[in-house]
Image (tube, rainbow, N blue to C red; front, side):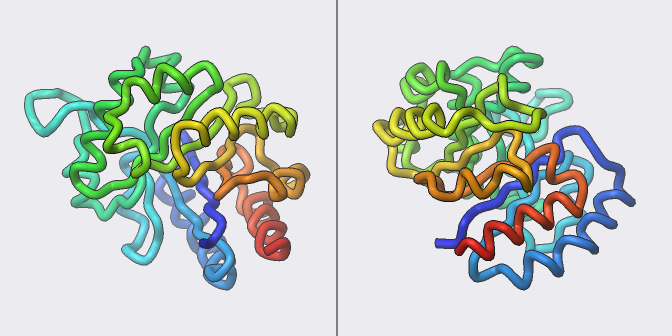
Length: 223
């Protein structure tokens, strides 16, 4: 299975900036497609810029089905755009938008109902209550990502022994693919590769093509 690399742009970039990023990076990861599967998560208004040959990922989805929910973007609408993956449960959504474990579980159900794979982000304290909220039949159909809030947006990852410990906690609930996110950079990516991970989530370091390219090269050459 190729190593997953998910680029989360968060609420960054304009349409010209996304186009420029794609023009620079797509040829790079096309040459590594046997070793890597790159997934790109831009803001909602930019999802249409990703061609059908790219792995597009939404950053959020409504916990509700289609209906009278002003401002919501539902799972069938994402499916219409060709979205293949969707982030759910990011710590910024939980903190700033007060999303609950049940909200996240509802989003998982909505996504899987239309064939979009959820990428469920977890801090260590979320593991037990989040798995308790999920429908048992859906647990193994998600991707998971351990992303400690204290290590987002910096230059150093969580300590490797902590990451290893939390990997074990998540693996106790599911054998599904597991990623790590939190201050992944070209300088520390090599330290993460020996861990029992299926991929990584890159946010800040994905915004600049030079740093993201460096991360892709390190991973590809290690595989």
